[in-house]
Image (cartoon, rainbow, N blue to C red; front, top):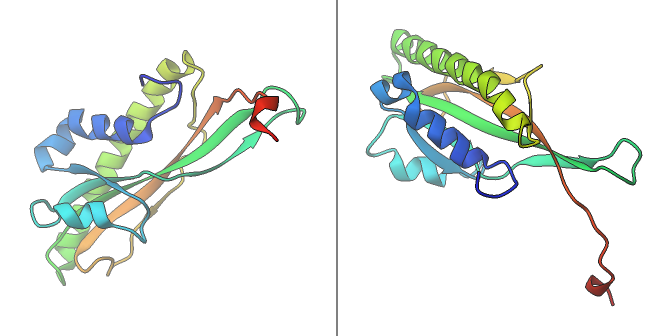
Length: 166
């Protein structure tokens, strides 16, 4: 966090690299643009079979209580926790899905802990609700897991500069 913005890619990479379960089971952090663009995942798929894939794009909005002052940026970051299983073996799939669920719960516990550290920097994690969804049976031919979304709110300074306009 060298700048004033929350860096979701760096945050989730660090979380993956420092979590004991993720390290023990070989989860590799990768960056993807969306589930429609899995380039970062496919580049590593030959060498690894477990991933924490962080999207480098996000959706969000700017808002203000009165529409004129004190704007905040609200952004949604999506993270996928994925693990390969023996294709066609539903017991293997269930085992890997359970591993992904466990890692997700550990990530959420760290997010809750970190929430207070980031609040000091005026970055607010919405931990009231962290939406998540498990991935269907035949996703990516032999991958299972889940994805979740972390909502972050941070102030943004919007200043009109006459010099930017003709």
